Image (cartoon, rainbow, N blue to C red; front, side, top):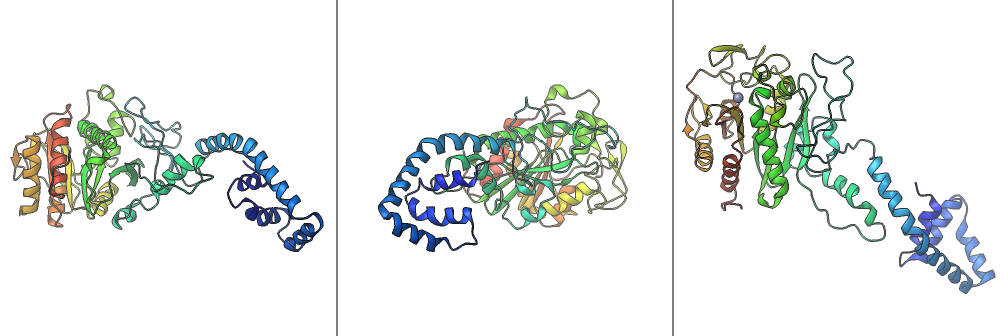
Length: 419
Ligand SMILES: [Zn+2]
């Protein structure tokens, strides 16, 4: 910490040093006393020249001792003790696997979720919005998700260099990470935002959890891509990526939430399709819902009621703020157009663009088996274009194909194809 005397010394460095010195010094000594009168008296006794000479000496001392000692200390403080209410995720790539909760006492079966506010999920940036400790859908709905995060970013990354000069213009570091809410077992459902334009596009990975783990890796790959190239997001667009919409299902297979590598994935992944209540989250939406849904030749739970699951509630409320939604699944290669009893034309248009760019076949419907309570169909009925993209298999991310398709989708809303 830096005490008041040092603060006074630093203030002397500024052009208005002498003007600033008097009120600050007075305040630090005793704010209740009438110091200006005493100073006038002092000036009468010792003369103004003596006062100025003393101030100049103080300036010289401050320049010699002040900045070189204070700044490193302050930078260290910032890196070790973030302000309360602000969680900072450390920088980590694939190699920096997310920290697993260190305590399993009193936890749900298998792996316990992290404590609220200490998510530790690796983010590409070092900044997390203050709202990260609680669901922040209200932030998303108001189209002002950047209102608080940039200020935090600036405070943590630039404060040590801005003491003696005006603050620089705010520069947003993308992505901004939001926690939309927590899963049935308490794992965070995160959204990564790039850009803050009016048109809001969402890409959702992992709604079928660890069973479709390659969609999660695809999403993290897209996050990495746009973290490296935020300039590819036009000013008119806000791009959102949810890497793992069913973190319970991911944890069942991987043993932890957040990033992972393909080498971590065990052979058996089927149980990772469901959430912590053993519900299929793509059978729980209020469109042709049924308590028992179909998955290939098996039965899966659609939940006790439409939107019985917290994950679908969270996604529903958030996705209603979007202009288009893409779900990534695996594996039945192709783009499947969402329909509301019949094909929804805007979904068809979205599917056309995606399929052409990714070189996936386009399907107007999914005919392998009846899907009840599906997410994309519910969105179509809500008037939001949506498609389900099935990757080629259960292991490859089809990264380049899907990045090309993302660029094409973004281009719909800008009129020009971004690089
Ligand atoms: Zn799926």
